[in-house]
Image 1: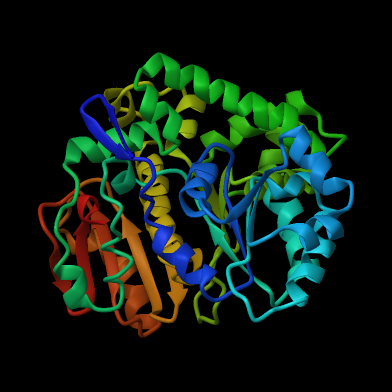
Image 2: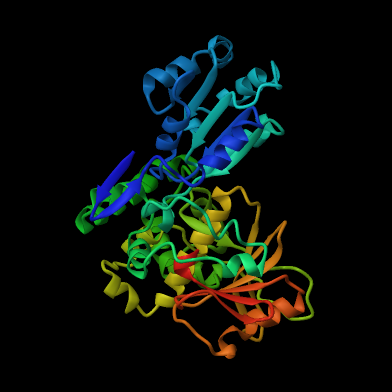
Length: 416
């Protein structure tokens, strides 16, 4: 199914995560798709759970009543496969789901769930369905998906320098900057206009503040939390000091810690812990993070055009968050398990993103401008040498992939 908007072709049904989802359905009795509201989970569910599936939407009262009356009876009577949208709306279904799975654990792909509020759903899933399910995270469109390119070249090339050097541009610089400005939520792309995007973002935040967060934190001071989110947007891409944040908002450090967990759990904020492996160097231990969707972030910062964006005094931090999210979303959609962190020494040496997985430890430095000056990537090279990494990656806006050193590769963001 294709959509046309401002000359761009969006393939709303063809998400890069689809292949990984189908793989999980062939292996596990239960698969849960977690992600923020309105990122495309239901659309993906519709494309997978068609003929032969029983479909339940727990935000529809009739469906909720049907399951809530007797969850065990519902699962016993359900024929074939069952897909349940917004499963966090009814935590009581999970014990019954475990019983249904255990009735015949040999059959994979029997239950497909979606959920928007991660802390509630993940707790219930792990308590009731440990060993019986796989969890898949779905975010908004990546820049590639938004422009009809659902393949994931970077995620499939991460292992070797030769594979990374073979990457070719998949987007123009104009397309990449457009995605950076707009973010990845599907509806603002489909409707097109900047005015609609502004109104949509404001109503999206209102929905989270008025609906989701009060259920997770019933005593939440919504007005002060709104101020906190605005302050957090200004700190996007920076090292976070919870005490400083607390003083800025007027709440205690424990409250800031809880609020950061809320933002991370509802997919508003990407938490990046400090890299903590043993090293002779003194490390900064504070975490950092960023608002995950660049469109929502730019709405909070009142950035309305690419010109506004590239002239912004914090443009480098905004670019770093956008590129980091493109990388981590690709890896998640490809089913590549990764631990992500950031690295900074007390002397100021910094690496924006450290990826750890089956491929080893790979540091990533993110720059907006192309640079051939080795001083600009000295910290990256030092990290590779100190920790014997297979390679290090510099992401910039240069022309073509380049090998800067024996184990340092430069990749234009258009090639990710």
